[in-house]
Every structure is written in C-alpha cells, then in structure tokens.
Amino acid sequence: MTNATEHPVLQLAVLVGSLRAQSFSRKIAKALAARAPDSVRCRFIEIGELPLYNEDLDGDSPPAAWSAFRAAIRECDAVLFVTPEYNRSIPGCLKNALDVGSRPPGKSVFKGLPAGVVSVSPSKIGAFGSNHALRQTFVFLDMPVMQQPEAYIGNVSELLDDKGAVTNADTATFLENFMASLETWIRTVHPGGSSFDAFMKQREKIAGDYVNGDASSLKAIVTRAGPATFFSPRGDHLEGAEAVAGRYERDAVSFHKGGNTDLEVLQASASGDLAFWSGLQHAKARMGRNGEATEMTLRVTEVFRLEDGAFKLVHRHADPVH
Image (cartoon, rainbow, N blue to C red; front, side, top):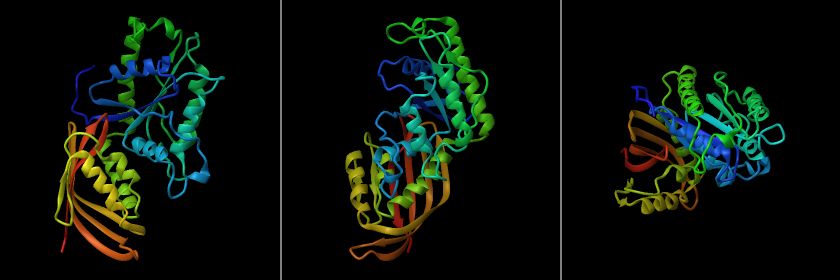
C-alpha cells in the first residue's frame, strides 16, 4: 500500500469477468486491490447472479439483482475490469453486466465513469482479444478508459502460488504501478470527484422510488449489521439494524405510485468511514388506502457508514416541518 494523500477516497468498482471461485482473473484482481493506493478503496461487485438482460423485465419492477447492481455501480467513481478471454472476446457474464448496467436507454450507470482494463490468461498473449473487445464497448458506453499502461497478464499460472499470491517481483511492481496510474487517470478525468457526491445523487433517486412504494433500492443501501437508528416523523424510534431495515420496508407499502420528492441538502460531509447530510425533504405523495395526494416537508438528518466500500444508511431522523 502507498502512503495516504489528502485527496478524497475514491470508490473503485472491480468487475471480474470469470465466475470460477479460484479463477486466475479473480486472483489477479485481488492482487491489484491489495496494491491500490490508500486513497483508493476497491469494491468487488459480483456479476454471477445477474439474470440475462431482457427488456421485457426492465419495467417498474426490474429483477432485484439488476437494481442492486446498478445501485452499487452508481456509488463508485470508476470501474476496473479484470477479465479472461473466451473465444477471442469477453465472457458472456461480463457482457451481460454491461447490458444490465447500460439499460434502460438514457439511464446507463456506466456513463462517464473512468475505466481500467486488465486481461488475464495462462497463454503468452495475455488475453489480448478480450482486452480490446472490452475497450470497443466503452465507445458507446462513454467510459474514458486508461490507455497506458496496458495490462496483458500472460503465463499467469507461472506468476502465482497455490494461495494466489504473486511470486514474480516484476509482476508485483507492475501491478502496483498500474493501480497508481489508474488513480492518476481517474482524478485527471474526474477532478475533484467525490464518491459521496455521487452517492447523494443516487440517494435522491432512491427517495423518489420510496415515495412510489418501491423500497428495493433503499434496501440496497440500508445497513444489515451493527448499530442503526431510526427516528420517524410520527415521533417513535427504533434501534438495531434488522428492526430498522424491516420498518423501512413496512412503511413503504403506505405509498402509491404517482409521488415525487426532492432533497434540499443544507449540509453534507464525508470523512473516513462516515458521512452525513442534513436538510429538507419535500414530497408530494399518494398515501393511504385510497392513495390520497399529500404534500409534506420533513427536516432530515441521515448518517452513513462505509461497509465493504459502500455507503450504508445507519441513522435517519425525520421531523415534519409545520
């Protein structure tokens, strides 16, 4: 690990194009993550359980795995792809992840995110074909990809021990230099970018889903472990991760489709593993048995904690503004 800098910590999504638990690509991805600068937090986002993309399913209630994947990518500042080569191209699972993340049209979670590519193969050419096939997709996805250094990890079986540790000193140095260069590329393309700023844009969309009765996107960012608290507009409060998560899901059913909301952020900050925002939430919601239109403004404070590289909601306090 390199020395920490004063830069805000970058959230780097890592997508591995091989589903095999002991794949060479996953081992190299872990080796890259271990050599990332302290100012880069690597988050492995799994793609193996994503249903094949089918536009017929991408309506008001898309598969939960798709929603969770899209939400996870939105929380990140950039994406690192580590992939093998299948038939001179990328594996089907990785192509499917790109399809899921780039749809519906106009709502791609990849748009504008800086990218890095590492291809891995037991053969000498280092999965050259998959590396460049993947790069072709970035033209349409509008992902600025780092051009140099290129990373083709060939003869990979000779570079790792039985536990996946890199045994070749030159390779270890290359991987560390690659990650340092990737950080420089991300900050060049996305100067001043903050993962919490990106997360807050996602948070507003999640609030919109919630006032339409859909708690699935909120569920993806609510902590499931450790301390959690919720002070509701009704004046009651709950403690404990499971109790709070359950309450959020139960309360969502009181909302009907046709609502909207916006967050008026008055203060927001992130430091280390904690972040918060406070301000006003303005909502026009349809509530109750008959879906009667209701307007409300809440004074809100929310606190988030980084868990496995992702912000999770651990505290919410909402009071009605009379």
